[in-house]
Image (cartoon, rainbow, N blue to C red; front, side):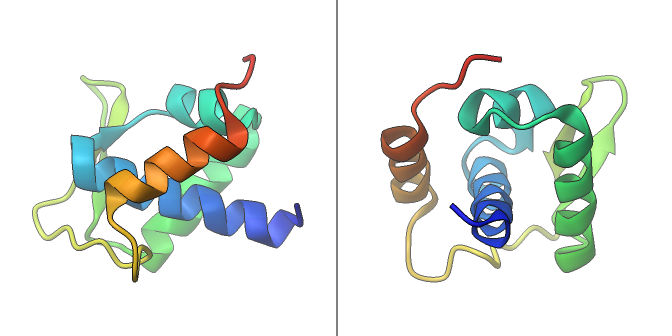
Length: 96
């Protein structure tokens, strides 16, 4: 998988997790994709640039939480549930 395609996949994963659960942690991304923390941090920053109102970091919860003006922007023709199921099928749970 190309780096650009993997990045896009992770950004959609973030969108889906925020849609369904209202929060996401770097550990969840590690488990799903086996990426390092520095790469995940970069992707969270990229997501916040693309969707500035969609999430913010909650220091007390130690995770990113869905913003008040959240709108899923990256999952154009799939439901968040369908997308997360596809990620699980394709990537399984990574060792991390």
